[in-house]
Image (tube, rainbow, N blue to C red; front, side, top):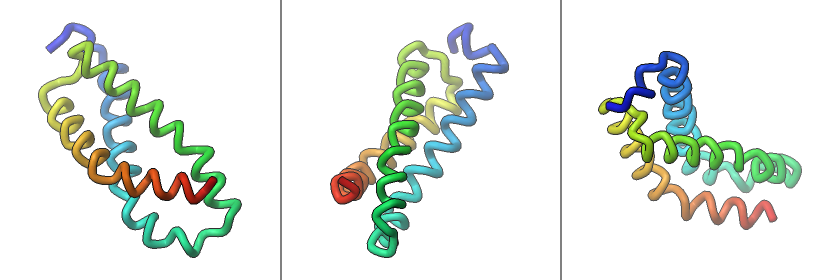
Length: 99
């Protein structure tokens, strides 16, 4: 484990990012099921806000590359990457439809 992982503030940021991204990516199938019920404005706002999640995922990737994750966090991160891989095609369709 890298020295930087011992920083309690960084550890809390990593934990928060892992939890929030897991929730967001896990919700994609349910969101897709409801997508046709959303109005155009709601779809646009979703598409506008989604890059925040992508930024958080990018930040997690950087921390992982720096070995800043604890073994438990690394396991959660690996699970998150699997979830992202499963749901990315669905998300892409939604974002394309949001135009």
